[in-house]
Amino acid sequence: MIESGYLLVVIILAQRMNASSAIIGLVLGAGGVGSIVGAALSGAVMRRFTFGQIAIGVHWIWALLLPLFVIAPNPLALAGIMLAAFGITPIFFVAQYSYRLTRIPDALQGRVNGVIRLLLFGGQPVGFTLAGLLSQSIGPRGAILVFAGLLVTLALAITLNGELRRSGKLAQ
Image (cartoon, rainbow, N blue to C red; front, side, top):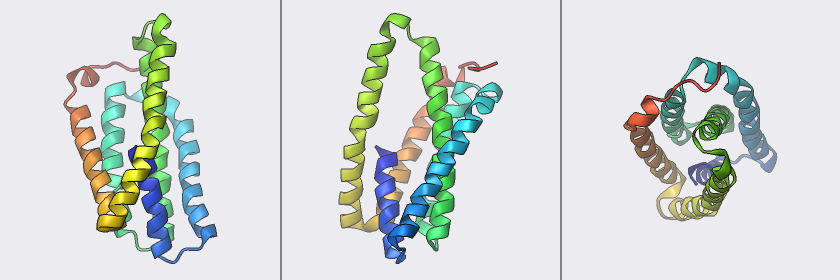
């Protein structure tokens, strides 16, 4: 939900910077490059850190990156923040998927993964709607700060989760 929501707000911010459609495409494309780099690094990160460390670290980094959109002076800065924010996302997704595979019995894998994907993709329209409503009512910078606040809350909840903090490494 948050990822899809702030993506829309970044587009609005870029438009307010008078970025052309091509430049906005490059800003979003930087996020794609970040995703590829993050996916390539995910194995090394999983060998070095536990799932809990990855979950906590990624969510705090994400929560700290998001407010940078508010102070970004130009589309190039937006692209750099997108690269970083989308770069850490696949690291978490690969780690959480691997963690689920180790914790959920084989007979329940399909059902659990189906529900998780439903929630993940079902939250996207909610994120877009929330982003639009917030951008309209409090402006795109305010919307980013609301999403950052939600991420801080999520990062705090993850940090306080004792089971996650005790999790072991996923890859050897």
